[in-house]
Length: 321
Ligand code: OGA
Ligand code: MN
Image 1 (cartoon, helix red, strand yellow):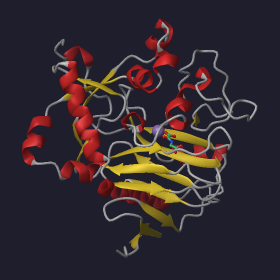
Image 2 (image 1 turned 180 degrees about the vertical axis):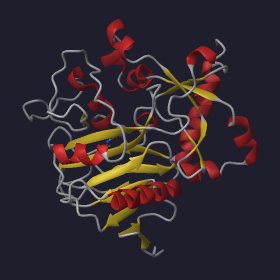
Image 3 (image 1 turned 30 degrees about the horizontal axis):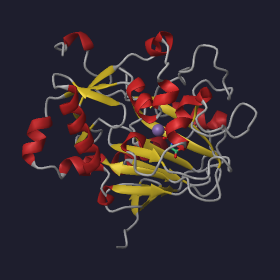
C-alpha cells in the first residue's frame, strides 16, 4: 500500500504504517530555538502519528536537551543505581539507552552496573517484558520520549513500536467495559526482577525506596481524545484483583497490542537520527543486535505529562488488596 504524504504547516509527513508513525521532513534543527509555529506543527504531527522520525538532525547533547525543553518540562535522569552513580553526560536530563560505559567500552552482559541495559540489550526477541511505556513506574508520568542516535550498529537494533490507540479501538465492547475503571500498579522492581531475576534478587531497601510503585488508570484518553491503554512491562498487578488474574489480563492485553498489524519497526540510519514518541499512546522495545561486539550509543530526553491524568491515581484513595 502506498501511503500519501501529509502536509502539516511547513512539515511533510511520510506515513510509515497505515495507522501510525511518520517520517517528518522540513525541520531545520540548526535554527535554535525553533520558531513557535514549527514547534506547534511538530506537536500536531506527533499527536497525529504517535511516533515521528527526524533523520540526520545534527543535534548534539546540548541542542537535543534544548529542543526537548521547547516541548515541556523534562525528567531528570534518575540515579537508579544509587546516589553515587557517575553521570556519563554533562546534561542531567539525558537518559543513557546505549551499551557503553563511562570509558566508551561495551558493557558486559549481565553486568548490573547499568540496570537499564539489561532489558534493552540483553533481551530475547518478543519477550513481553521488553515492551515499555517509558517512566510508567513514576507517579508523575511522562508523555514524550526523544531518542537521539550517537552510534548505531551495522546491523539490527531497530526500535519497534505498537499503536496502542488502534489496538484499544479494535477490542470488543465487552472487553472495553471490563477495563474501563481499572487501576494498574506499575513497579520498576517488578519489571527488573522479571527481566533479570539473578541480578535484581538482592535489590536493596535503598534502591527500592528510590522508586516506589505508581498507580495509573488502565484506560485513558490520549492527546487527541482517543482512548488508549497504559500498561506495558512495568505493570505489576491490577488493583483489587488477585495478582495472578491481573497478570493474566495484562499479558493478554500486551499480546493483543503487539500483533503485527499494530507494530512498526523504525530503522536507525545514521547518527543524528531522532525518534520522538508518545508513551501514552504507543509501546516500544529495543530489538537485538550484536551488543557484545558493536557499540550502540543512544541518548534520551523524557518530557513530563501535563494532561489531567499526569499524576495518576493517588495511592491513598485506593482500596487495599
Ligand atoms: C528508550 C528505549 C529503545 C532503543 O530509550 O527508552 O527504549 O531501541 N530505547 O534504544
Ligand atoms: Mn524505553
